[in-house]
Each structure stands twice: as structure tokens, then as C-alpha cells.
Image 1: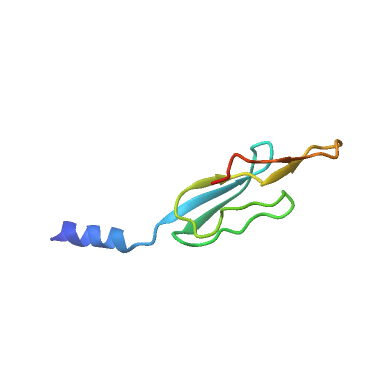
Image 2: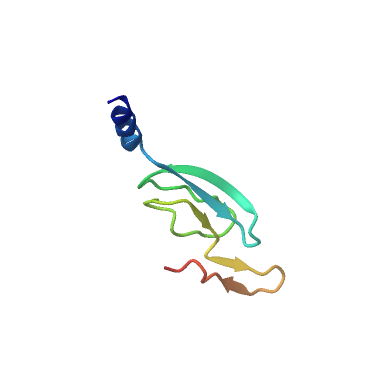
Amino acid sequence: MAEEQNETKQESAPEQFVVTFLDCKGSTVKVEWVPYGGNATAPEGYGSYSGYTNVSAHMDLYPTSCEAKDSGYTVVNTADKN
């Protein structure tokens, strides 16, 4: 019976997921724990991010585009498209 109560407690506890925001080079910019169905807050100054709302799994997110320094070109990140 004690085991059943313990399992019930674990099931009722909200799940937390790690959302890691990376820069264009893959370096970690911000790490945030988010509850199931919650929204992360994207960092400012590293480009725009998508896919950090209604979180239901651990995820690593890259900016949707990266600007190549001194070239004037913007490189679009297509790897994270669903």
C-alpha cells in the first residue's frame, strides 16, 4: 500500500523539462527549467527563437537565423523546422 501511495505522489507531481537556448555557434546562452505545458523565456540579444512554448520535452534551441559577422548575409537555420 505504501508503494501505491508513493507512485501516486510521483504521478501527480508536475514534470519539469530543461530548455537550453544556444547561440549560432552552439554555445549555451541560457538554461531554464519549465513545467509541462509551460513556456520558456527566450534570451534577448542572440536572435529570435521558436518552439519554446507549450513545453513537453527537454530541448536545445538555436536561433531561427544567424548573421554572419562583417558579411551582411543572414543564414537561416532550417534544422529545427517541424
